Image (tube, rainbow, N blue to C red; front, side):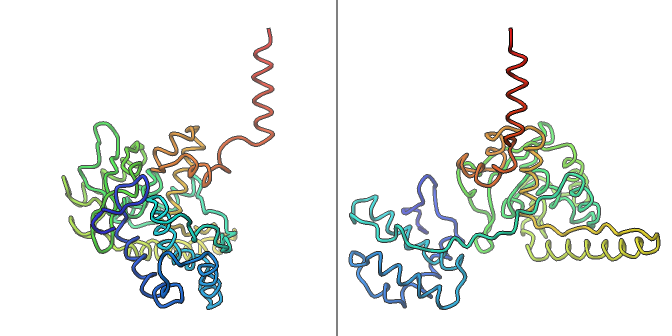
Length: 313
């Protein structure tokens, strides 16, 4: 994987963080297990199912166990694809879905403005870019000044960021993309670059021109700012004898979801949403945001009735 001679399907290379995750799963969980003592061709599905049951029984979260199985599944998929093995024992392993019932946090357009206004101007633009361009955290960390095309009002997403490796290739080929620079975002970016004086290959949001921001620092500063706002809002509400209207904290990834929601609300079609979000498959877009797309029974009926009525001779 490190030499890029083994790669995921449809992609140029495994991400460094994925390789580290696979190495850790192999070293800590797989190699010491009964499965780790078997020859590759001798492993049966019941052996892997027993490993999954043991890991779950030890108290590990479903998501953690699923991640431990990722390298096993990748290994056997490749072995079968290259005719090294006839049967994939990693197929059909029974794991709970582990899906959270908590709905995806999405801010309204008005709420996004309020959340940004409460932040220190020095840290506001990175959150604005998450809200209004939908970049992933690593893409925000790796964004350079030369990626901002103010003439054409475009943002070129060319790379991601790994905490140990630094700048890396995007998550997939579709991750390298061009996103429209909305007017509301342009104002934030122009003000930030004027303040920092950064240009060319300098990182837009880095703690220095060539060192990416630390995720926990960005998150904590925002949470503190929103907490200060809420304290003041409660005091003002009590003084004015009204119900306070506190802000609800949000994460950078939830800002990305908000951008997709704003695209859909503005009438963008699914293919445009897919392209701007950097999804490699349209199915990913439908799986994540399908519930936001227009298409309820009532809406479809009303549109079809109007269309057919207008089409009558």
